[in-house]
Image 1: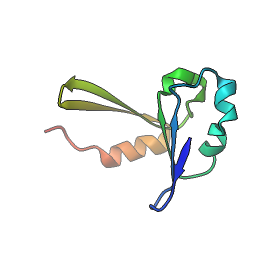
Image 2 (image 1 turned 135 degrees about the horizontal axis):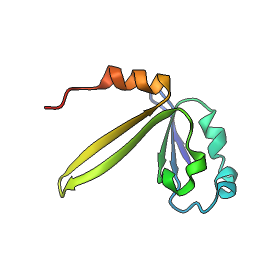
Image 3 (image 1 turned 90 degrees about the vertical axis):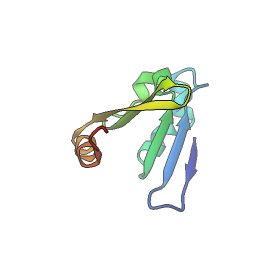
Image 4 (image 1 turned 30 degrees about the vertical axis):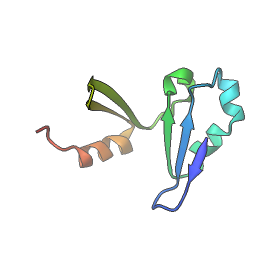
Length: 92
């Protein structure tokens, strides 16, 4: 887990690729970071499903072609739903 400052929000980045269990994740300080404020970006969250926060945005990139990706956004909770409604741009 790495944390970055300097912007409007503090950004925490957690890469769960090599994490094998919820106990191992707990030892990294991951759950402390979730309560520290700012934004938390989690890569490979499917490795430890119990680590997913109840609220937030789940983002998944789908490879459409060699040079194109599609972004899937899943809001979890009222705040995330309101954020998605405010940010949604109609498809071109």
